[in-house]
Length: 302
Image (cartoon, rainbow, N blue to C red; front, side, top):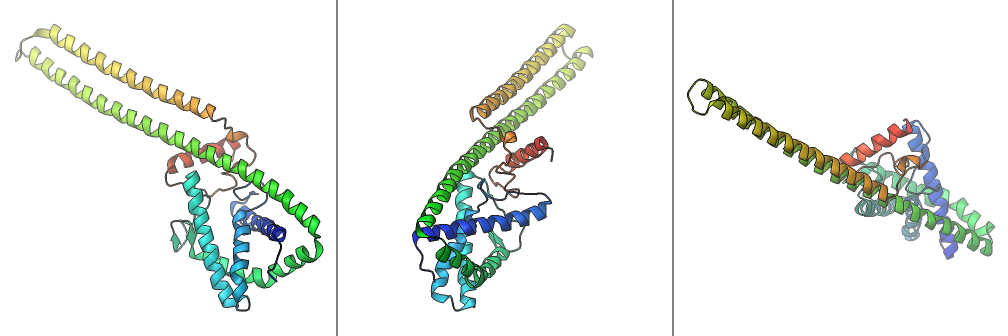
């Protein structure tokens, strides 16, 4: 047992990727009350489960007769893999594609106690029950040439899907960056407009006070001078407001042009990366991601 050729390891990897997809998609579909094609990839494969299964098999080799050690080592190995994978993906894409922040005893939202305990249980099930019939099927029923061809074909499909999904995630990151940039600039301009408005209102209040003094004879200058100053202040206020409005429009046009240049049409994608990962979160682009999710769901009518 555990002595396999390279193509057999690949076949095991893809089989467990598929089993992981079935489990996750079923669980999330029940929670969401709708069918969900779960995962980072478009194909029915979850690489984290495939990698986790292979890692568990490796660490279980020296202790396979001891269920307790299999449980502990499998739980630790799979949890480390889940954490490293999650941190790496968040670093690359600025989006966390699974989020345990709402779970009890979680660490950075990447791993949690419940998940670790589940990985341990899965390790025992895998080594003692699940892997034995799969091993028998792959080793005893798939000829070497057929195994090599199948593993290479599936590998090609897997890598192609990985490239496409990676590109989609990078584009999503670009969209969120642009949305955040424009949001921050608009908020800064709106704040500036508010400050200028308050400043000009104070100037107009000062003119009003002066006008009362002129009209009551406490200050020389007459009504003409007062009216001239008031008109100048109002004109300055109006021009500043128009200038800021023009800047807002310019930034929005720049955003629209940048968005089009990215050649992204998320609403026309049948299974978007966010639909496959409904719990996706982002600390850096939280507001932009929530807004994007909302607009996607509204466009899809859900």
